[in-house]
Image 1 (cartoon, rainbow, N blue to C red):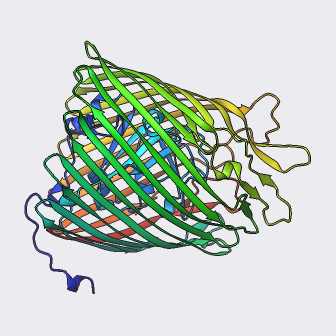
Image 2: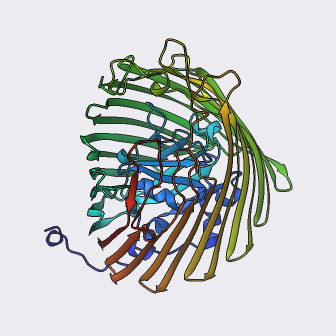
Image 3: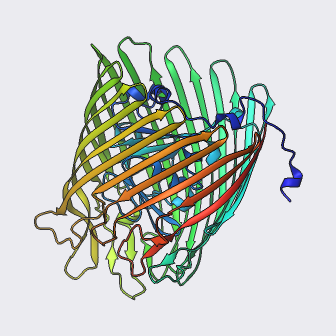
Length: 620
């Protein structure tokens, strides 16, 4: 019935269909990114390991969900705990509920103040609306604040003016049983453009190791839109928002229900000083896991920054922000929070200056000062230096970052269905702290070859522990310390104009243990693979026909044990007409099913081979 309501005509040159073109290596290195320094600057100048996933990358890989996109990234561990729970983590200490990555969608932080991690089942966008995803590995707390410990991910969507016309995608397969995307973009006037969209998906349940169903299908719907207004020659206004609802299966339990929405307003003005930007957002989330957990949360955030570019030899950014978040939780037979509801406040100011020292050498000094409702004031400074000459950049840095406490650390009470509390949070829980030492090199030795290498050594203190206290439940504390070191390598080669190879390898060594005198029973959180590797081939077989292969290898996880595995995804994309495209997508093709992550749960889930087809129609 959808097809009968839309008239699809051939798209004129310059429309969406003509944009399925890989950027050259040179174009990628010159691409401006904004996350590394909170200002537009080419990738080649970043004093940090950085990667950009473009819209073309995501399209060629057949990505359907936001969390899935990060499998394309170098150095990130991406695994599934169950049918709706993803672990996205960099540089170690991976847990179910990974809590040391700062993730944003158009600058809106999406981590949960409940536990510092991300409910990935509640976070999604229309993949075709993504312009790029900027990924910084390593600390970025001096600009982005607490929880930007192991990295920053910023999902940046396209302007409404770039998504004009109508898009419809439908598809189905053995796992992705229902795929539907609809988008329409138009103009109110020459200075005002908008888009609206709707997205629905139904994914079948995964499997247990026995081959039985894990009873965890996921169905989810989302709507949203964006409006961009050129208010004057020097000022732009953006208003955007999303709303979602979903039902998530859970083994031997009633379905989990989720719902929520957000609205963001952003004002940008170019002036004689540089660029001024102000952003406010409101976010509402609801989650109900019957007999286990329930939460309703409202968050309001305001952030203001000023870039100063007119002072010779300096590039300065400074600003501040305030966030208030209140929640109400349910008392269940499994766990509860004391108090039942809490309002938390987060205030910050920051400043950073990149200084030209001559002969291609630049030094960066900056810090963020934050005050949160749990541990008070936190200072998170950084010092970096880079040397750029021609196509080569050498950089190094020292940074401090913290993972601030949450309700999970201070207020949780776990009963496990018994009449007594088995695990309790601690009101005196302190921030987890890290000092990071990094160095790296980025080079383009040939027109069609680029590579990047980074090494790091992270020292941790006050990591979360489970401490034995006489005549009391296990108590969450800060009696774990240690260090993690690693090497990250990545390279891109274009052997032909119509083919690109990208490979990466990550080695990680961890030494995390309880402090002397500690009564901790865990020996430190985290289940980390010592080796990760990817190899990707994106190629145009002929005009309008693309073949793309993405392979990945993860070494075995040590504790709880999960076998290592290699997997391959394949997509074949055919432009049947200038306005119609067929995609054939195969995921996890090397095995019938395989496990990816374990937190010690009794029923380890495995993830099935998935094959699906999608038809996309566009009208400009």
